[in-house]
Amino acid sequence: MFLDTLISLDPVASALVERARVRGAYLIWRAQERTCARVLVRAGRVEDVATSVSSGHGIHVVDEHGGGALASRDDFHGEPALGLFDRALEAAGHAHRLGVPPAFLSGLAPERARLQPPGLEAYRRFDPSRAGKRLAELEAEIAARAPGLTTTLALSTDVDAWRVVRSDGGDVAWVMPRCVLRFSASSRGTERHTVGASVSGPSPDLLDDPAKVATFLARAEGAARLAAALPDAPSHPAGSYPLVIDYALAKGLAHEAFGHASEADGFRSSVLAKDGRFRSGDTVGAPHVSIVDEPVEGDHAWQPYSSSGVPRDRATIVDRGRLADALTDPWSAPMSGARLTGADRAESFRVAPLPRMSNIRIEIEGASPAQGAFEDYGPEEVRELLASSGVLARHPEVVYLSGYSGGQVNPTTGDFVFNCKAIYTLGAGKIRLHKPAIFSGSMFGALHAIREGYGPLLLDAIGTCGKWGQSVPSSGGSHYFLVLEPAPTVRLGGR
Image (cartoon, rainbow, N blue to C red; front, side, top):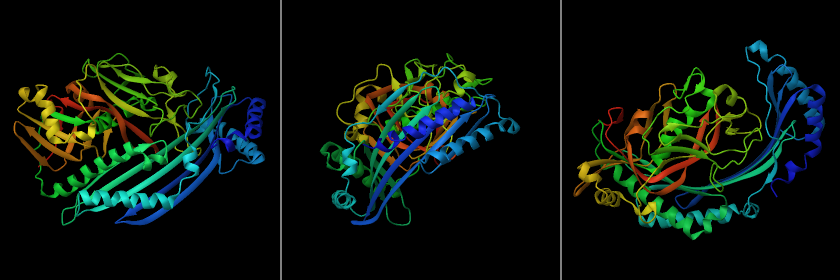
């Protein structure tokens, strides 16, 4: 359905491939059509409805000397496309003047596939007016449970269709459907705190999915109550403590600290590389800890093929404490010494692909069970879980960092700085809420400090990953909770 336009471009693709053959060049042609919609409700009223459609194609050409160039157009017309190819090839011939080293592409398997997930009809019948009414109903239900806050609900839909054709015979096309239901609550008064919650899925029908709605309402109510309580909460003293982090903060640790450092286009300065080569086999964490990145069908960041038409592979970045795979594309893999994992992604047809994460998570070998859903665990339930497993016998008081609200890492040194949504001190017979603070330290120290995991893997912590001016969807997670032993290289900020 959503691939029809891109598949109809066979004459344009064939003409470009033939032009590349005649001119002795290597071609990667990327065509994209993207349709987005957004409905926003605040205080019971629909405040914004927006839709957008974008389409076009990009030409990526490598000449016989290894010089490369990109060019794009916001249409699919055949004759202009051939002219665009000629100009891109001419530009590629001047790449050496900019000091760009030659880069040849060869040995890629010519994959041919069409992949269109089921259920896309829901996007055709999506009604923003009906969605607005449903959002207002959900907002009223949340307000009844947690009154006195400024609240916002938004539903966004995104159908992103791609086709990648290579002059070596590769030709893949796929559709990535995404839908996100978001909530934010802000406290009122002189000290304002805003806390958000979300659920995602591959279809806008999630508004009518009882399980999805129940999860969303539970998360939204928790966010609202937290926003109301934070203004009166004290700060937490800075220092190194035994910590518990939830799956969302664990996703932030995996993504920001290890994920970006494992992207092979940055290996000239990454702490995970030496002399531009990936440090495969080096010990970087505890032997029961692994970090895995792979596309998960139906996930917010799912992408089955790379922007070069290579199947996206499972990459075990850390395999039981040791570096194993890097996130590589056809350009960076040969130089990095790591195998090709097809990790290149592009925000649009206009830009150059870069090695990027998809769904990244921390996995703990021998994780302990945690019954029920993650939303069943407030700070009291987390304390009971730690007490029953002996953690509170080992540490009379544990600091629980709840949620993730952004952060950054220096991939050259491996130092990270993250923000959580709230802090709780959990001890025998007492629980105390604190304002959010900085969680910082060495990514190696954090990975060595992880001792236990609780619950099944939960991989729906979503976000947007920015790199070199491009933004793409990201997701991931871990087990419900991870326990970190006190470490001098891992600290909690505060007053």
